[in-house]
Image 1 (cartoon, rainbow, N blue to C red):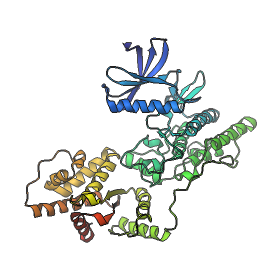
Image 2 (cartoon, one colour):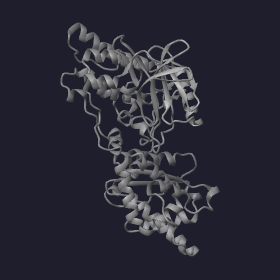
Image 3 (cartoon, rainbow, N blue to C red):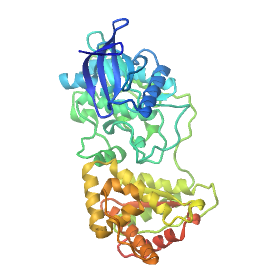
Image 4 (cartoon, one colour):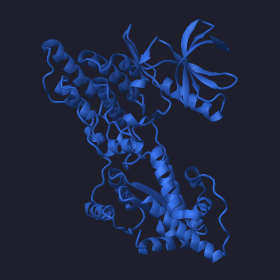
Length: 481
């Protein structure tokens, strides 16, 4: 056992690159606690702020079914979040030991998890990482609590800004389609219901909703593939329970449960039928699911013809062509929103969607918007895992050859993908410009693959620099573009 600053450490119960959990005793009152510490052995100001933020959110949602936080402790080398220790273990560990839950135990846990999640939502917080690892149970006492508010967000009603597709927050196996950032819609509390559906699926089947080899395949599955019903894998699961899980896993948040109250009502009806009749017979779901919040649907209305034209152009490109579309109109009429409708279509085809915004203050910077596009593409790629990164690195090196260093010099962020490169061979000014134009065209072509269409959106093109306009012309006339 080790001691430090008023605590005796007993055992490390979880460790990852991001954090570790240590079971300990607080010496001043012999209180058993869990210490959550950053994964690095030093006190970093950013990590300290993250822990303090998690503490503030956890305090905001304090109540039954929520892990209790005592405070933030600053040791000499790092900060730690001090949590209660009620002798619990994660549902993930329980599943590993016992396998899938029986229907009766599932309903008991499901009702209590949903009750706790409803409490979180009523206090204006989206958890954003509901999964068996973050649900702690003590099988001896029956106590169950939701933990880990490290990426949770406080909201007034909902977030209307789509998540950044280059920064994934959450756990891929349980991530709602809109939380991937590839659906062009905001993330609200209903993303937690999707993750809850993925959790319920695992509790009933001891399998993930989607079993995929790579992060890219998993992202695509959440966005575009229909999930199996639990009953397909375990026929003994009653149809209404299976239907509840499928409803939670709807791609469209509007088709999921809208309230914890409505979900609990259906789960309790399943339990009542099971106890009274030893059979969960079918019934109409969602009859008690009524939200009192006014929410505008995030659909796109009145532009069906324009959206259809964009989709048709996208389909032609997917079949091997290339398309250049110009959209004009007065400021504020929804040009950017119209183009962003392609985001969903691109994601469904495992494609890449990258944006750059032309800035009147940057007109003297050649290829400024194209620079943004390439940074966006590299960041997206890095979220997709090793195999995709290796494939794209090879494609870029093959396409650019000795000019790989030219791309790295022009777009330093690409170094994370291609590594350090020697200085490019100096050329006279005009030749250097032409070489860079050619290299950028080749790089964009390398990102375009038959199985992965690429959509590049340059916003506010009226402010584009001359070099960017020249590159667009090259892309439009290149036979291999």
